Amino acid sequence: MKIRQFDKKDIASVISLWEQCGLTRPWNNPQQDIARKLTVQPELFVVGEVDGQIMASAMAGYDGHRGSVYYLAVSPDYQESGYGRKIMAWIEQTLLEMGCPKLNIVVRSSNKNVLRFYDALGYVTDDVISLGKRIIPDQ
Image 1: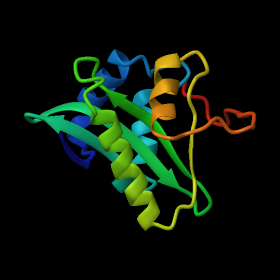
Image 2: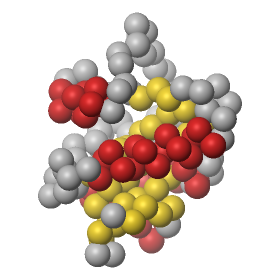
Image 3: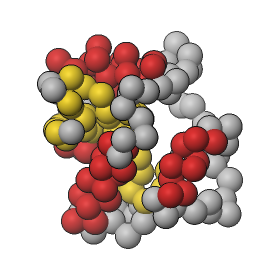
Image 4: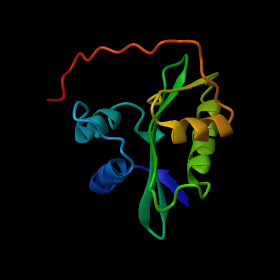
């Protein structure tokens, strides 16, 4: 798998990937999420390619205190082949080089497979409650 920075020509392929992986939700417009990410640390929005086809993606960020990862996706055809682990290693190394001391990841509690994936990478459940408030509606 080749990891490279997201390019605007990738929009349709990436959204299709997210849909295949069940990451899209009605209240999050994926095109708007992409547009927003391209204005903040676009170098931390990456895709993975095999034979020139996008089969993975991840959005990362670092705010000077904590790092984050969103939209980590690996096509169902390529899952359990080490590609998610490879993208996470790239993200961890890149954020480490930026001075990031800790990485926080938000996973839906119902997504047991993804929770097992992160557990295998050494991530633990923090004793916190994630709070959210939408301040710009996508609809």
